[in-house]
Amino acid sequence: MELWWFLRDGEMIDFARSIGSAPWLLPHKEEDWSLGPFSHVRTSNEEEKDKAYEGKTIKEILELSGAQKSVKFLEDYYENNEFLLKKQEDEEVAPVFKPPYVEKLYSIYGKNLETEYSYYFKDKHDHITLDSKAENYVKDLDERLSLHSDGICYEVPTDSHPSGDGTVPYESLSYGKIWEEEYKDRIIKNIEIDGAEHRCILKDEGFLTQLIQLVGEDNCIIKPESEKEQKNKSSKHKHKHSHKSSKHKHKHSHKKKDNNEEETKKKNNNEEEKSKNEVTK
Figure 1 (cartoon, rainbow, N blue to C red):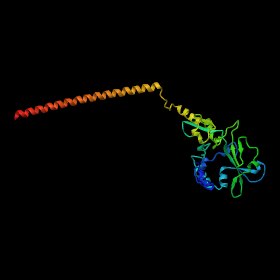
Figure 2 (figure 1 turned 60 degrees about the horizontal axis):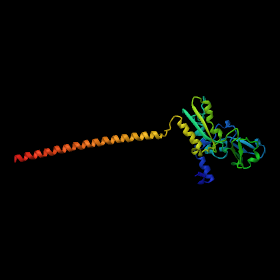
Figure 3 (figure 1 turned 180 degrees about the vertical axis):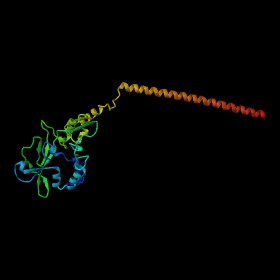
Figure 4 (figure 1 turned 90 degrees about the vertical axis):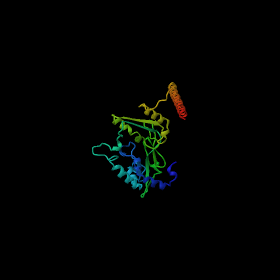
């Protein structure tokens, strides 16, 4: 059940802005993305795209929309964090863009679903809103993008380029391919599953098949026993049980024999004692 079933729009916005991990979901290294800015703001009524809209960074959009708390989270806990986005002088990229220190890394993700990519806003001086008239101004979009009437631009699959998994754009999903090329000393594999959705991938047949195959690479899977092996195992178990039972019976019989001898000896001693007493009398 989705959270917005219980919250009004305003409550949902306030809740999202209060989450310290929200900036973790935002795209970074924006200058390296091939399809341009993620946010565009219309400041005039010019019909030409380049004049009508101005590209904005994620931080600029957060500030324009009044999400100051999210901006602070982004700066304090991410951009100024030497373990995440803060790059040291001797580093080419920030730590978060390096692969984790593991011997083997497998990245499995879905692709070729329509996925939100960028947004077109209208500046209303004191706030910004999604531009419902963006289609009238935006011309010559990349073939990988499809602009909807609500001002949201979606990434779509083409013959030459895949799209995302319905939640995350393809360029972010496939970032592991950069690691695969740069870190040849490690085992890094990127596995793409056509049509697998971001959350539903966990029950996707293609994903489960890949998972079993990868786990089985190191013979970690317990193989089912053959019928012959099961019969041999059952026969050994029965023989062992029969042997234990026989030993138990023999031991019990021997113990019973010892008890009988002890009782006979005790009885003889009692009779002998009785005879002595009679002679004394």
